[in-house]
Length: 143
Image 1 (cartoon, helix red, strand yellow):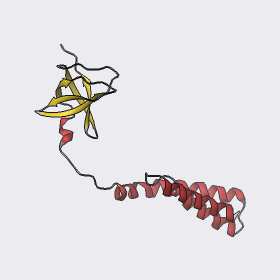
Image 2 (cartoon, rainbow, N blue to C red; image 1 turned 90 degrees about the horizontal axis):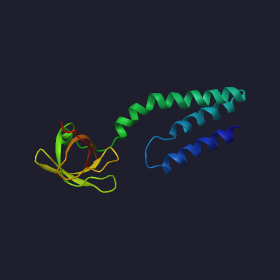
Image 3 (cartoon, rainbow, N blue to C red; image 1 turned 90 degrees about the vertical axis):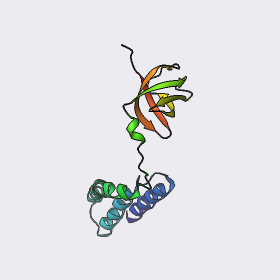
Image 4 (cartoon, rainbow, N blue to C red; image 1 turned 30 degrees about the vertical axis):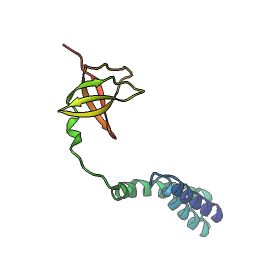
């Protein structure tokens, strides 16, 4: 059983190394080490499995929030989020398939609709989010 737990740990580490996003399966590697240790002292299989599950879950719940803060990478704060909630003018057709352009507070941005509709030039839209280098917009109903 010790070899099986070690294989689980090594497999989890390999999956972790193969994934571009950090912290996907490392928790199971930690649980596998505990499973191997419980197998070394000849505890019953059900105890080994319970220890594996408890340690894997505990390491995920305790360590993940802490590690995520440090592994977040270089986030550069910008003031672009000030556009969220603003009303913009569509300057070229906005569709799901092709980015259009909108003018918000005197600045031109690429935009895509959050709904499936296309939004024609000249329409008013509300900026609901920013995704990368484009604004996600929703048509404003004219009253």
